[in-house]
Amino acid sequence: MARLCGPRQADMNAAINLGLRAIASPTCLRARPKIRAELTGGKHQAMMDNKLEKAAALVLEPPKEPTKELAAQKRTNFFLDEKFVGKFDTAYATMGGKRIRLSGGMALWKAIKEGAWLRVKKINDARIAKWKNNPPPPPDPDDEIPMS
Image (cartoon, rainbow, N blue to C red):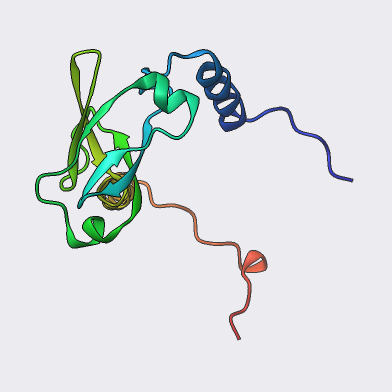
């Protein structure tokens, strides 16, 4: 019989983020990091379809030289990028006189995927370095699954 587990860290983080998002100001991009944009007149502009978007009243400066993929999208998302993770399709939002850096979704997720593999390599290299002086035990033959 399966036993019930308590909440996991990710579940608690999700609950906290949802709670903060519900009470955060519409201009708080840390709580609402996504800005929806729509192609209008050949340039992406921030969408103002719901109350939160209207209340945020942000002005989107689309990328000066968007990739052809971004330029072809009728609707797209830009995300808060304070750490300069995205390397292309950089846009800016102006809210309350403050200019904020954004990255297009494709640029941000491409950088995150590439960074994830670099992090995996770093972790594996550290494990291998530890094993040089103290190798892991050989696998248990009774625990191996035959591959035939």
